[in-house]
Length: 190
Image (cartoon, rainbow, N blue to C red; front, side, top):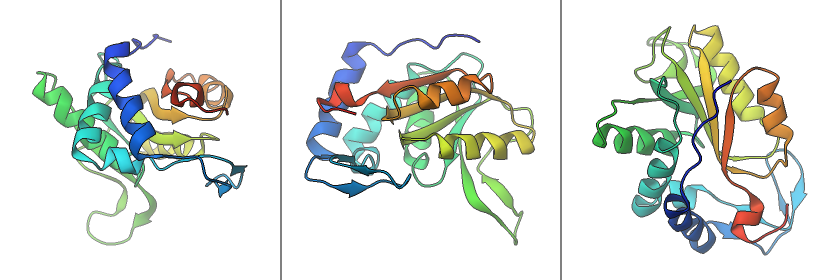
């Protein structure tokens, strides 16, 4: 399993700062998508949908992609802005990259299916997620891609609040995984 490069502190520091200032809430309790209750919540979309934040996210993700990745994306909504920002940054840096999205349910009209965007069987994918606690969205995206003949060669989470749970889950599937930011990086506990 190839080890992805680690983003430099110069790339991560402004992203962490943006997340702290715009997306982090510590006035919980909050119920997470996993059902867990937490004193803090990261509304990553307050960064990933912001022009400056999206650029910072795209730069960070593009800096850690394996050389063999053709397409980036994941479950809609969380992965969508990350994938588009990463494709724009990478392409601007001379590395053509395409973004895609995985629908929660297959569409029954038009071309149907769960995959949206310029992704085709045989493309090598990096699956993305904004914030992960259990890895369920990453695994669902991996399953949809593999069912469509798209091998997943890497997974990246903007923020991982799982401890080592998601890393172990993806390692069991043979997928190299890199969380860019952990709670400690944001100045909070798990």
